[in-house]
Image: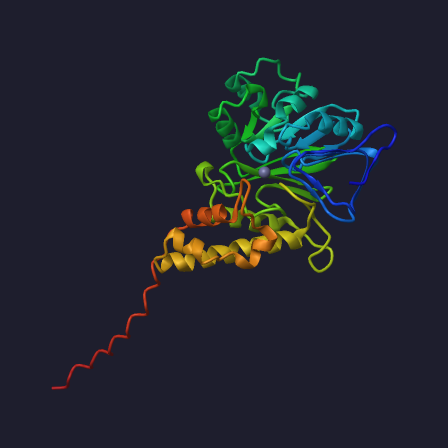
Amino acid sequence: MPLYEFEGRRPVVGRTSYVHPLATLIGDVTIGERCYVAAGAVLRADWEAIVVGDGSNIVVSAGDQGAFVIDTGAGKLTDKVLAAIQRLTPKPIQFIANTSFHVDHVGGNAKIADAGADLSLPGSFFAGGGAVLGSLTTGLSRPVGSTATMLAHANVQVRMQATNAPADAVPADTYLEDRRRKFYNGEGVELFHYPNAVTDGDSIVHFRGADVIVTGDIFTTTQYPFIDVANGGTIQGEIKALNAILDKTVFEHEEDGGTIIVPGHGYVSNEHEVLEYRDMAVIVRDRVQVMMNAGATLEQVQAARLTADYDTRYGANTGDWTTAKFVEAVYKTLKPQAPKPAAAPRAAPAKAPAKK
Ligand SMILES: [Zn+2]
C-alpha cells in the first residue's frame, strides 16, 4: 500500500478496508472500516485532514454564524471528524441535523454536540422554542446553549428514545411539518420530511445558496434503498421521496453538474444519478408488483431475480443490506392490486317501442 507521511502525519487505514496498490494516500488521511480505495485514487491530506468511512457522509456548512453539521457518522472516528470541522472554522458548531435515527448517522451526536455551543435563543433553529421543551422531555442535564442544538424530525427522537439512546445524543429540537426553514450562514437552509421512505423520520437538507442537497439514505451510491420496514420504510414512500428530490434539482448540462447531491453513503453526485436510482426503484417495484398481482409468493419473487440487471451496481450478497433484503422490503410494503375490471360489454341499444 503506498502510504506517505507528510509533516509527521501518516495515513491510517481500518482493518477491514482495502487500498488498491495503485492508490496513493498522503499525510493526515483516516480511512475507517469497510472502505475500498480504488486504483488511481489520490487522497492528499497535506492541507486539510481527510476522513473517510465513519458510517454516513458528514456535511458541514461553515460561515459567519457558526458550523452546521449534517449527520455525525458512526462515532468511531469522531475525534478526527471534530478536528476536521475545527480546521474549517474557528466558530462553534451551533447546529447538528440528523437525516435518520440509524446508528451510522447519529453515532457522533453526543461528542460533536458537546464540542459545540448554541448561544442564540433556545430552540433557535426552529423558531418556536422546541429546544426547551425537547430538553425537558429528553432529560438533558446540561443547560440549553452549552452544547450544539441537535435537530431532526420528531420520529428520530421517538425512535432513539425507544432504543434507549443516551439522552445527550438525542435531538431535542424536532419538527413535525413537511418543511422547516431558516436563513443561516448567508443562505436559506430547508429541511424536508418525507414520510415512510427509508424510515418514518427521514429528512433531507437543502442549502439553497450553495445548492447542495443532503439526502440521507433516501439516496446512496453504494446500495439498494435501505428500506427499514420495521421502522416505517416503504418502497412507495422511497419513490415519492426520490421524486421530491428531483423536483428541487437543476442540471447544468445534459443532467450533469448543477445541484450537488450528497448521498447518505458513497460519492458526491448530481441529478443524473438520483434519476437513475429513482428509475431503478420504479422498475424493481413494477416487476415485483406484476408478479405479486399474479399471486407469486416472496420466495417465487426472490427466485425470479428481478434485480439482476442492477445487481452489479447496487447489489450485495453479504453485509447489512443484501439484495434479498431489499426485494423482501419491496414485496412486504406493496399490496396486490386487483385486476382492472374489463370494459363492460356495451348494452344493446334499447329498442324503440314497437309501433302499434
Ligand atoms: Zn446510512
